Length: 71
Image 1: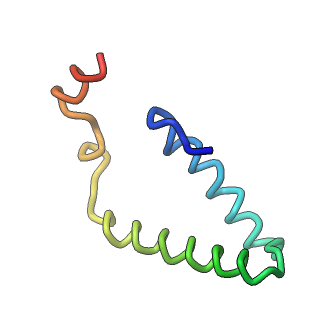
Image 2: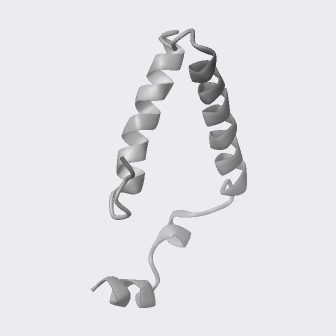
């Protein structure tokens, strides 16, 4: 099931932490598909980290216009 946009990052953060724990504890399934997905997830995370490494918290804040659209 897809995440709702209003809690997408909160839900994904919980899932990412669970994935990280599984990797740290060598709890990844031996299936090729799961191993491939784990590798791809790591690559995506590295890409996100690289793309946004210079962002500050203030840049993640919604603009006044975005606040008004939601309200």
